[in-house]
Every structure is written in C-alpha cells, then in structure tokens.
Length: 358
Image 1: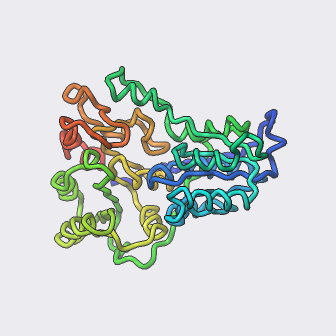
Image 2: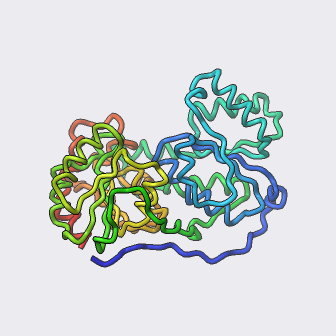
Image 3: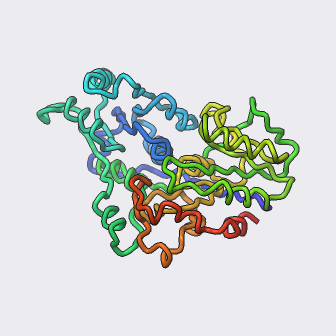
C-alpha cells in the first residue's frame, strides 16, 4: 500500500489591511470551545492559522485541560481551563471572574451554548463592558431543514463557520494556509513499529450508536489487510477497550491502544499512520491535523451538514445509499436517530472500504 499522507503546505502571507485590524493587533483574544472532543479538534486548524497570520495577538483558549493537548503544536497559546466545578451557575460565576482577571479585549465564542451565553451576560450584562463578544453562527435552521427532508445540499463547513467569527472581527483567515502538525516520535507503547511497513488506524466507535460501524464489518476489513501492515485500534477505556482487546488478542498485526495512552501519546501514534478509518467522530478530525488520509464512514448523519474531516477529498467520506435511506441525514449529531436509520451505516459494504485501502 502506498503511503498517502496528504500534507497541507503553506506559504507565509502578508497581513491584509482591514478597518479594525490595526486596533486589534497587540490585543488579547479569548477563544472559547468547551466540548465535545471532535468539535474541539475541529477548531485546531482555525486557531493554528490565526496564530500564524496574526502573531502579535495574544491568544488564550478556554477549554478543558484534557482537550488543551489538541493544541500542543501551536506556539504561544495560553489556556484557561473549564472544570467540573464550573458546570453550575455558581461555577460559571467563578469562571467569569477568572475570565475577567485575564483582561481579554475580545472574546470569540466558538461554542454558542447556554453556558457561554451566560458567561457573555455575566461579563457584559448591560453592554457597557470594554470586552467585545463575537459568537459562532451554527446554521441551525439550514441543518434542521436538511434533516426534515429538505433538498440535500452541501452546507458551509464548521471549520469555515469558525473562521467566519474571526472575519466578523476583521481578522480574516485563509484555511488553505493550515500547516499540518509534525510527525511525533512514539514512546511508551507496546507496538514495535520496526516490524511493519505500513500503519492503519481504525476507530470504530462514536458517541452515538447510529454512527458506529459494526465490529463484524470491522473484522472483515482487518482480515483483508496484509500481515506486514500494522492495524491500530482506537477507543475509550472500559467497554470499548474490552471489545477491541478481544480482537487484537487474536491477531498478530493488530494492536489496541484503547484506554492505555494519554491524549498526547495517542496523537503521537496517529501522526505515524498512513491511513485512519473512522466514523463521524474525533479520531478522524485528529488525523487530519497531521495530514493523514482519512476514510470516514457515515450512517444517519451526513458530511454535507459540515462536519467532514478537515481538508479531505469528498470521496473519502463514505455515505449510505440515499435511495435506500432517503431520510438521511436524519440527525445532525447522532442524537434522537429515527429507528429506520439506526443501522443504516451497516448497509455500507466492508468491500467498499477495503477497495479504498489498497
């Protein structure tokens, strides 16, 4: 199998002059994205391009300590951590006080949920604060129209929606200028990387079951892969870890790292892959940060809603037959999936995935 890294290169560009830009340079911007795993990963290219395009601006990212590792190859970023104690109103008041203490000039809300709207209100209850708040526009109406049977069309990607928030601040971003993360040396794993020619990652799980390809189909894919190719399985601790270890224990070229590594270590493993096979989930988004080819498998959700892995060709997203499942996309995130679409993803034949590997 040929290596298929799709590294995205960049030419450094001059900052274009915009009406508000000179006032913002040398200012402090707080960027908020609290969750979830895949959504935070999708903000990384935007923050990276912003850091490179506007090096004079001080950046603080508000997210969890765990998710902060996703930004580990972007220089000169500060973090403010969202913790369990911040999840109620009293905690949000504490968090708001912490935000006030860092004295950000502008707040970029890439989440736009009840919590971040409360933070906005607490910081600026009567619109008299010197801190300006800019919110993500999620395109909720467009997405709901699609899942309610509207004509299927490609919506703006979430990556571009994130970038648009910065444009509203007169800080435009060209996402084509994203530079892939560098390959990371691997340590502290049980994988002998010297024994294999190629490395394929498979992440069969997702937050919602209608986005998960069956392990029966995953096994068919694994069985088709040559023994000189190492297959690395990704998943969460607990039940996913148990299921994946049952597979890896029977295969000499298959390793499960589920529940065994920190996020930074897992990212290092991903950086050494030649290919990632993932669902509509975080692992695919992480792989794109390293310029890795991603084959993503879609069931009741659809890449046209805007959540496809960054910079990947449209053909790398494998979707169900819409003649057989005309109400797909039936859900935006995978929640509240109609019963007739719960197992739609398994109508995609393993052979179709296999044909894209070789």
